Each structure stands twice: as structure tokens, then as C-alpha cells.
Length: 341
Length: 103
Image 1 (spheres, rainbow over the protein chains, first blue to last red):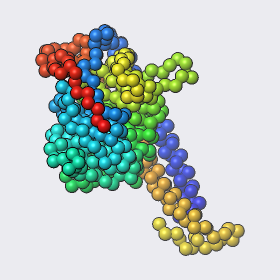
Image 2 (tube, helix red, strand yellow):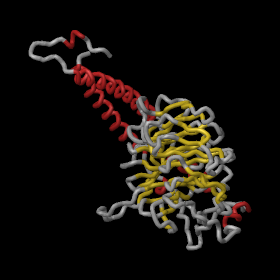
Image 3 (cartoon, rainbow over the protein chains, first blue to last red):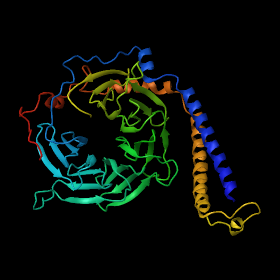
Image 4 (cartoon, rainbow over the protein chains, first blue to last red):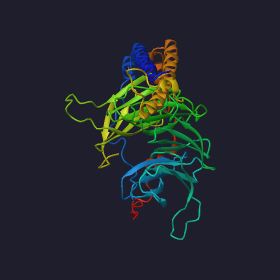
């Protein structure tokens, strides 16, 4: 095929993709006959009513001397690992606030951490493009530092997020600035599967966050600078199961809903959104959009759901932390942090 | 994909393609394949969407499910009371906590 014929085919293929995307958007809009809040109000539901004595801070974990970028709980919900750009991971007894480990990292520019399901290992990653695994029961070296027990190398960009697969201590998923997600075998350090990259339907920009489905650990969702979230099946690396559009900026954070059938997202566009995993529907937008559009809307940096999913906690770039009633899309603010969450 | 020598031969009125044209051809060819694959995925998704129910269809079940799960962070939640929650709301046993700074 000649170069000019190829160029014509490229123009035609681009036009076809754009036409199909438009048709998809239109069809999807037709199916969005309501949202969660509209439906809940029509069914007579009222918003959660917090008083000033509800949601009070019961623990402050002090010790890091730099920004805390990430934290993760053990499955038993009694210990926490936190990662800071002071160059440390700290393991906390969450009940007593005591520190059990302070791990000096080979690279201080850490962005993410995760507790292994067995509670004996932690993983972290960051600007070094590697994921380091530490065994908490290892002997410390003569400098008193816990040695790295395994390094997962292969990403061509920063590791923005990592999570152990819940019912498999030996598997970990990472998201990266190289636009891919990777499923790793931690015992061998080998990549089992790469999601995205040269295959179509992968992210077209940095992956910033991943979340594994707690009800079905074969499924995980990723959020990216390409303003989409994508659903993956770890058994099918060749394509994303579904792509979720709606955000107008980087998707900084994704988190599965407790029931494993929906997931939440938070973005540079200042909104959180709730998506239905199976249908792809955008169920609800949680927006603080100001009436005066000249004001900068703070970006959403992190989210988490309460155990029922009724509450969506969202941290914003201006240091605010809000809690949304997910069913009624109403919002409360509470303080505590003085800077960005 | 190798450049066809016949196509690379000069044609009247046109000069021989520069090396950058050959690199461009490889790139465009890969892009065309990617776009055509994406078209197939989008068509599949359109077909799936034809069989997808409206958003409202699943919401009653969603509301009931969320409201049925006991949640300690809610001012009021469905029972029974879970005593294991109390240890979090009693406050830390050591009120000073551990505040050593990591240097």
C-alpha cells in the first residue's frame, strides 16, 4: 500500500472511531434517565444528618516529617502502612497509634504503598520506577535498616500505585506513569501480565491509581491522566473490559465500592463520580462546583468509601476533607489536616 | 513492513521518498491497525449498549443494599450493635500516643 493510500486509510479510520464514539455517547446519554440522588429523593430518602459530635478524630498518627502520599490497612484493619517523601514507610498499630517499624527507603520519592494480605510484607513504589517489597520479619542490617526482600523492575515510568491481590499473598498489581498496569509474581519478581502499552484499549496517558475488586480479585480498575477509568480482567491482558468516560481531567484516584459492583473516582476536574462496573453507567457526580466559575475548583486527590458505601470521603488539593452522602449527593466538611490530603 | 522498492522508485513529477517518509509509513500503518481495532471494540460496545437497561433499573436494589449494611460511621445505622467497634471510639489507651519523629 502506498504512503498516500495509508494516509487516506488513517483519515478514514480516525473518522470512523470518532463517529462511533459520538454514537456511543449519545446512546449512553439516552440511558441515563436519572442519577442516584434524583432517584433516592424520589423514593423519599433523606440525607445522613451529622451533628458536630459525629465523625470526630479519634487517632492522629504523628511521626512522618514529610508529605504522606499513601497509606494502606491490613485486611484485619488493625495496622496501617504509610509512605512519605521523608523517605520512610511507617507501620502503625492503628488502635494504639504506636509505630512498629520505620523503614528507610532506597528511594525517598515514594508515591504508593500496600500491605500484603498476610500482614508480613509491605510494598512501595515511586519515582524510581520500581516496586520494593519488604518482609517485616527480616533481620535488620548492621545499619539497623530492614533490607529490601524483592525489587519488581520493568516499568518504564514512575510507579503511582500498587496493591496486593487480596486472596493471593504472592501477587501484586501496579499502575505506572508508563501508561500500563502490571500484575506481578512477588516471589519470582516476574511480570505475569501487562495491561495496556502496545495493545489497543490501554490508557493513553499516565496511570495514577488502581483498585482491586474486593469481591472478585480477578477484576481491577485503573484511573489515568487520559481522563478515563478502565476495567481490567487479570486473565485477559490484551484489552480493557470497559472504558469509563465522564471526567474532564486526570483521574487521580479510583476505589471500588464495598459491594464490588461499582467504583468511585476522583479527578482534577474537582468532581468525584460513581460508575456501575457492569453497565458502564455514570451513576452520580459529586461536585462542589461554585456558582462563580472564576473560582478554581480544588482537585480531588484521594477517596475512600465507608464500609456500607453510604459515605464517600474525599480529600482535596486545598487541604479540605469532605464526606459525601453517596445516595443523596450532599456534603459535609471536616478539618484536621492543615495541608493537601 | 518493508518499503516496496517499486514504490520507492522515483515517479515523474515526484522526487524519491526521504528516509523520514519510510519511518512515517511504519508509524501510520501501526496507527491504522490500532484505530481499526478500536473501531471493532467500539462497535462491540455499541451492540452491548443496545441490550443494556437504563440507569434507573438497578437503583432500587442499590439503595436497599447500601442501607442494609451496618456502618459504624453513620449517626444511625441498622443493627445489631457490634461491640468490636467500641475499641476505636474509646480513644487510644495511651492518651499521649506515640509522637516520636522519624529523623
